[in-house]
Amino acid sequence: MASALSPPRLPKPKSIQPSHYYESFLEKKGPRDRDYKKFWAGLQGLTLYFYNSNRDSQYVEKLDLRVFVKLRDEAPWGSSQDPGTHFCLVLRNQEIKFKVESVESREMWKGFIVTVVELRVPFNLTLLPGHLYMMTEALAKEEARRALEMPSCFLKVSRLEAQLLLERYPECGNLLLRPSGDGSGGVSVTTRQALNGTPVVRHYKVKCEGPKYVIDVEQPFSCASLDAVVNYFVSHTKQALVPFLLDEDYEKVIGPALPKQLPPASITPCPSHNKLPPLPNQDENYVIPIGDDPAANYVNGDVPSPSRPVVQKPRKLAKFQAKPPKTPVMPKPEPKGLNSGLAKKLAVSSAQVFSPTTGLAGVTAELEEKLQRRRALEHAAARTGDQQANLQA
Image (cartoon, rainbow, N blue to C red; front, side, top):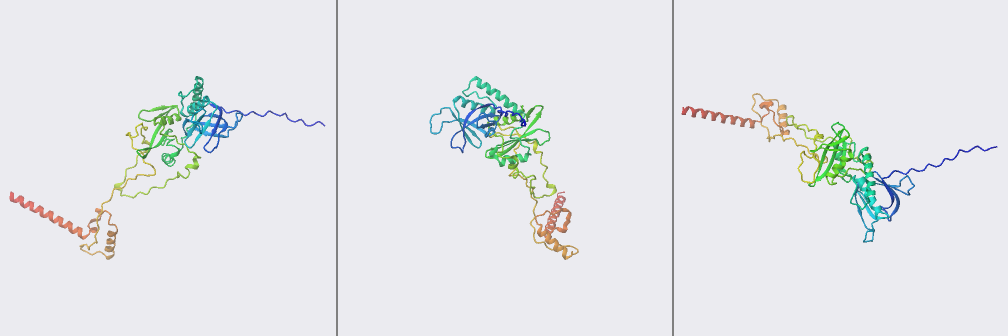
């Protein structure tokens, strides 16, 4: 009996290598590593991926270059001379050391990292014209990629939540993008910097005009993407502003930090004639970007930090020093219960203002006596003036 035919074996699909701007072998040593470990590394976007071999499609480690600080050359440990094969990648939260095979490989890695992070081709490195052309192509791809995606520092938070995030997590950055509060569909930029030792929060409007984003400042600046808006603030402050980037999941971090409903502030009530005017719309309080001079004067006022709210104090009411009430001179005595209740009320509410509608019934005998004396003096002075006028006539 013939055996059943087995289905033909299909060849295993080959793993597709990811598309990288640049890739080569790279030896890596992290802050917890004792020695260098060799990887196949590839740069794509703002992420540096590490593979066990150049045939793998699944990475084993990665580095986020959005927290990039700088690159520096350094000699190997225990050597006074730099052979040109070592460099250090300084991130916001760690430093990673690398070792390559040649000086050319080191310059290539440094050049591509600077190109994608700072969106510029570094011409100060030892590179050939062909290398510079490769970096120019990578720059165009990175600009096109960023134009289609939202910057990492964009969060769907309100104006107050943005201030709270920048205040409570200063190590994550001091520049944040958020939806505009005026309902126009645009975006706003919130920054927090120390000015003369005092934290200052500022807000900027970014208007959408067709495919362009226009920063609403004294001299409006047009950008092709939101990422270019972020680069504008970073470059015009000499990298003093750092895009906000949470190290953990967004919901886990800001869950306990930002309550859904803020508790109402306790404000001392005041009379209706002393009511404070309504606060203006805060989304209209925008200022000019920070210049090079830290002591520059700004057109609009600064926004106070949300942890220290400034509440205007109501004007103090006039106070009268109450004395033990005396029995008022009345044509008919009032019931004892009414007199005792009135005396207690005057003693307890001594800081209240007497209303003119209550008449003289609530005025103490001492004040009434002083008032009568004053009227008698005014009447005598008037009579004396009339007599002198008659004598002169």
